Image 1 (tube, helix red, strand yellow):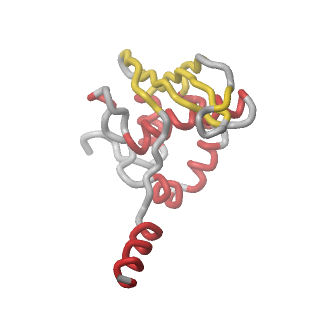
Image 2 (cartoon, rainbow, N blue to C red):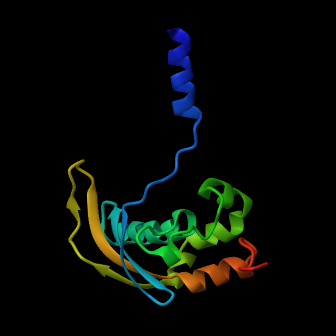
Image 3 (cartoon, rainbow, N blue to C red):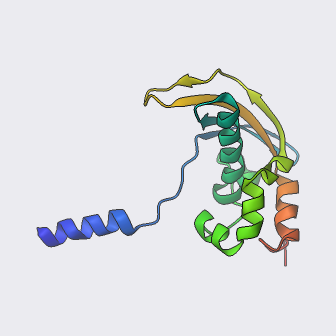
Length: 147
């Protein structure tokens, strides 16, 4: 019994957890994909940034479900591993560089507390997937398609 309990605890604490962003596919147009995202923070501006990062991270590390062209992640390794191997790129990227790939952010709801008492906002975020992929290729994060 104790052995079983220890095994369960080990599995819970040692297994890699994949982040689940609050993102839902809305539409696409060419190389652009629009997603409805929830952002969490105490202030509106910070919550919008959180929603934008959720959209970009979804494209990068999970793929966008609901749209076959964007259903595969651009980066085929876990986020933690990708960031660890490319620290300079991702430090710059998360420090505002990601905004080069955001075509638009449209706030749909005011900042309000959700069921878990966390302040959240709903934002439609449009990401230029082609530009993002090309930047990753130029930076050596991913290989060019077909090579």
